[in-house]
Amino acid sequence: MKIQLLPSTFDENGSASPLQHLTCFIIDDCVAIDAGSLAMAASNNQRSQIRDVVLTHAHLDHIAGLPLFIDDLFSTLDAPVFVHATKEVIEALEQNIFNWTIYPRFCELENMNGTVMKYQPFEIGKEFSVKHLRLRSISVNHRVPTVGFIISDGKTTFAISGDTAEVDGFWQILNSEENLSALLIECAFPNELVELADASHHLTPLGLKRELSKFNRKKCSVYVINIKPMYREAVIQQIEELEIENLQILKVGNVYEW
Ligand SMILES: [Zn+2]
Image (cartoon, rainbow, N blue to C red; front, side, top):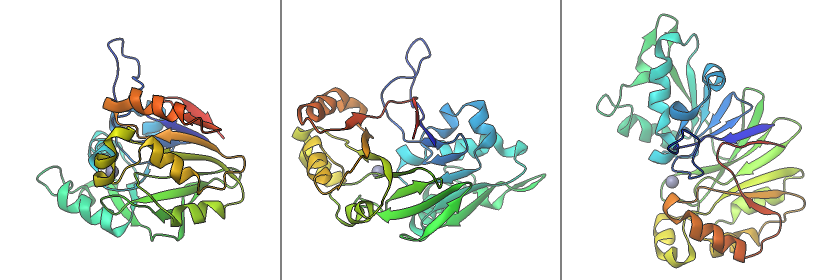
């Protein structure tokens, strides 16, 4: 299974910057997990293949690229873009984004071939299929309804936390998973901003260490994601000082294969 965190911004030479402002993971060039930079940074190959977008939650940094992605493809789509999300996230998108004020209500629009966008609600805890993948959503602890996922292609399985603060059920489910190859977990703020992290339901490096102590890790590689760009250096330094074994920072734009 191949996974890539799409870039959010570019430096003066046009190369991807290591900063992660937005969240959008592409699996095997055909399924998007979150859509933060989907319209802005997907390759032409990915753009032509991705017709399934799976959302963790409705925060802007995770959905910003979704309206633009459908807009860019509108006249060329011969099948709808499926948006897989919980009922709460779909309601938030319909009320606040696809409401004819911020952007068109694409689920009501058709091109020559039919509907351009369709919602596929999933229930928390139940498995569902997207293309060749099996996904199971797990409720996590954020300011809005948010899920993480366990994702498998039948050979490889990995987990992603979504945006979250302290959790317990998430770890119980991950610990019961036999062959987890990788875990992607957030760490947004440095330790000195623990109050802001608590108020916005995110992790600091110390919080990350506490959370990972609940994880029966076996041989699983752990990658840190969703570091706020402004605090990136401080967060990385504090994570390194914790000397957590088998942990690295996920590199923007890199293609990982597990
Ligand atoms: Zn969030």
